[in-house]
Length: 353
Image (cartoon, rainbow, N blue to C red; front, side, top):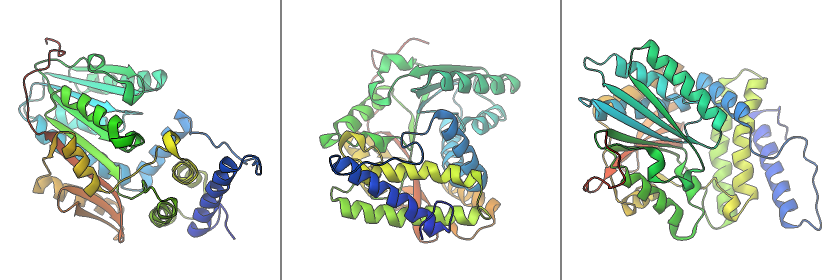
């Protein structure tokens, strides 16, 4: 009965069945071979950009993440003249137009705004930089965009052009889980060390609130099935019947399902952890939780009222150390804010302003 164009549960089962078939074909290549009806590789930049825009229009997921983190950024930037946002995997930069509007409307807006966007597509970074620069010019906001074309784990401090007199904010949205493939989290710890070396005033983080990094495959599979049941359920609520837009979003999530079900080792990048685990890893990396104030919490809850759906809610996740977006009783995404435990002297790698 499973079908990628059926009910939400039929669609979900279709994608999980495909992932299981792909796992079997990878594990026993001498026995099985599959001819997939569509591409099994990563989405290209245009497909992913379109899927994210559609998701942003029909659900509060993207807006919850971006809006809540931007509200926290505005608090950190109060009274600062020169600000520098380092975005790990900026993609289309959907998070930043609303922030630029807010910065420009401040009684005393910053005298200089720099955004460093990290990504692997030179063309996408160029397009994003051009759009943001055009908006900043229209807002009469002094602006500079700096692109770093590289894998996140290969970025080094000198590439980021951090300067001494800047208020630095580092933005990590749905990225840090990709660094959990290495033993003892050495890749993640190296990334956190890089972030600390920028002397950030604040580090913003958003991650999938799930346990998809279990060593035992059966448990990982069961956790993923429960989590994505909720995701496909909310998509079913957001769309009336079938549509190309709905399939585009479901294909994006299907690739995540395929990765965490069918792949192992360094090929498995969808290694989501619950916030309680992230809290320990962030503290091991030298960061302390700085939290959200009451106004920021209220604003994130008011955002959900735009969607006229009582199934969405925002809770203080991780024992009050983060904000979690939920669909009914299923946690979806948790956002959090951090700062270095000790702000040491200025790094010798920082450049004079």
